[in-house]
Length: 467
Image 1 (cartoon, helix red, strand yellow):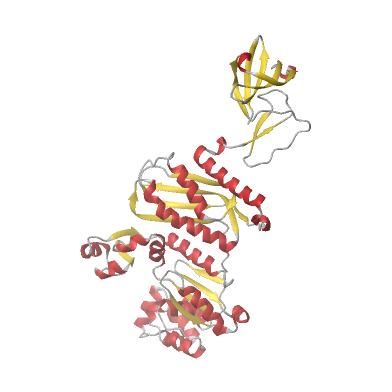
Image 2: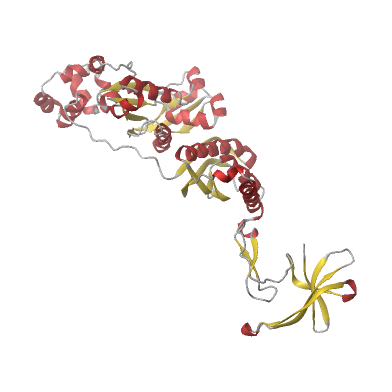
């Protein structure tokens, strides 16, 4: 038994879901069919103006001057279908996609899980009805029959006899036949699918061809259908065509918030995290603007990515108004459970990483690092930059060193200082022709600040400040 879900205006519904404000205007998607452009999907405001599917686009514009037209894309609609399938995958693993507007769910394997066939249907039908899209449902013994019933808007029945009657009552034009087979069937006097199914197989093959015969045999369950079951994608990609061109970042915040919300739902459902995402802004004439957004550690909250993107907006001017936004997250990682997150140390680390992410977004990734030292005794050589947040390795018997090193060292006078500890003699560097011969002291100035000073070539220098 199969449940088929048909979404007759999926691209339109997905647009309204991501951009609710677009539903306040008459909106329609058009497509070139043959030599003419026709309307394929339209919202309620357009319907009120007399716009209908299959109406010529020129006629639609004459009926509704305010009509917002967008080009229909089966690829975009298929992407939306995959998102619905990913959502429903939580409740049913055996899904088959019928792009761009339908999917079938195998019910027999779910009977034990949901307490029988009726229970499986009720649970899945409820989950589909909760989706923010227009839907038409049907149930039949095979997915092809269920598809035809759903696409024709037939009532739902779980009784096999009733399903067979509904299928037989379908008009020839709703039977899934090729245009050529429909024409020959009508010429032979057939008006209903049931009339064709009563013909002997040899007669169907002779009059309408082997393709039509195979189609009818699959509808009646005489031939087994092969299915390629859906597997959730391993990456996140979501595109959004903007109804109007947006020339500034502020106007992009609302659609971006929607896209990051989609990413958050995607990651949460799959228990995945991601460290970097990519925002692609399409322009009409200029090359796309690509903005990477990275967290200090992998996460799944869309709001965290959006807040970092807002910090980067000031430094990234838009070369041209934006007509489309695309959000991409490729490198998904498994979410790790940290039970110790409730303890202070882990919470402090989480806050530190959030700060690092913000600093990187504002200053650039290479401008933020953790200080560390190596075993080179020369100032300027012993300090190294490590990835931000990384705990430095302690050196055995490491001498006290200032956190704020001055490069180059500043000329100073010994009269301004009171020597505290020293001298620490450094006579090294012969191994790379940058020899150092100095005496270092820890000294205090008149304000009580500790500095690191040294004497070289009859002159005192300030090398750095202690915290």
